[in-house]
Amino acid sequence: MSLNEAAYILDPALWAREVLGLHPDPWQSEVLRSDAKRILLCCSRQSGKSTITSALALHVAIYRPGSLVLCLSPTLRQSGELFHNITRFYGIVAGKFPAAAESALRLELENGSRIISLPGQEQNVRGYAGVSLLVVDEAARVPDDLYYSVRPMLAVSGGRLIALSTPFGKRGWFWREWVEGQGWERHKITAAECPRISPEFLEEERRSMPAAWFAAEYMCEFTEAVDNVFSFDQIAAAVTDEVEPLFGVNNNV
Image 1 (cartoon, one colour):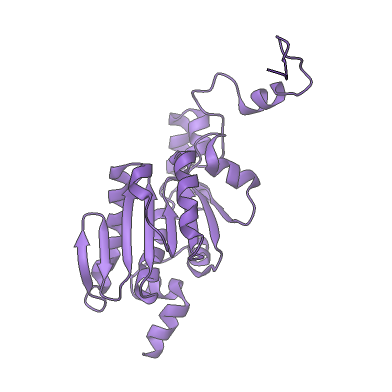
Image 2 (image 1 turned 90 degrees about the vertical axis):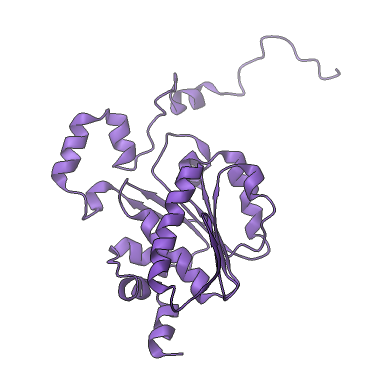
């Protein structure tokens, strides 16, 4: 093994820069180099969150033979987009790390590693075990029951979980994990922090979009869902154990 290869194994950010030709932002380098088991990425549109997780997925598959990398997205189209990013990067290194098999949403390398991209239906994801890296794309739109059904995949393998998304209201597991979850490394990247998004574009978007949508899509704020009649805080304030039931409760029934 060459000194360069040894360095690439130890430093995925260096590999992404020198081999894939990426220019990671500081936060992207932090994510690539992180050894955290659980990572939440709350990021603006076009911030590069899918790009950097695609690079990490490929790095794991190449340098950890026999790995299973599972990428979960809410829809088939989104699964295809994420996998396209991965295969685009793989095309750069394919000559050095040959594939044993490849299909529309699956890449298997000769070293025994697999990368599989799946749309978000529970019947699609059950049955996988020994997952080395689980990537949940557009996580705020992945249903709670699906999220809780995939977590056990990491139980035996000790694999990593990376969830990336823009906010989608004060609801769902992604929001709950962001505000109160334990054991997560968190990264929040607004559009104002992304060097590829100009202030002029942001100002135009601010003027053109409803404030709640702009706050969620670009400022990474968990706003009230646009279809909610009552806010989360109003609902929470209305729930109390001090209110007597309208009809008597017979505990003997």
